[in-house]
Image (cartoon, rainbow, N blue to C red; front, side):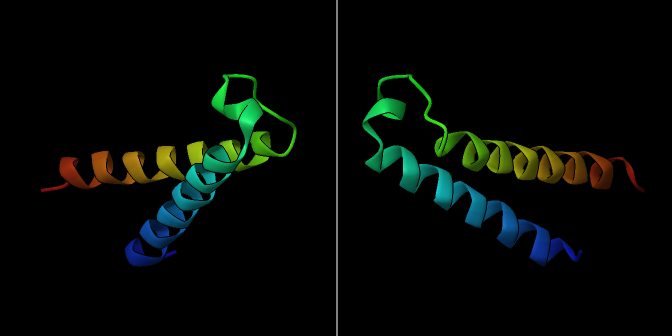
Length: 61
């Protein structure tokens, strides 16, 4: 996956997560719902992958 594609996937996952949070009363009250769990997991995985890529790129000369 290219850097651009990875970033776009990360931002789409962020958008899905914030959209769900904004419309889910349970999640807004720190009571995650079954619908929100996979959305949040996808966002966290994409965020972790992006952060790892950035760390790796910084280490390269």
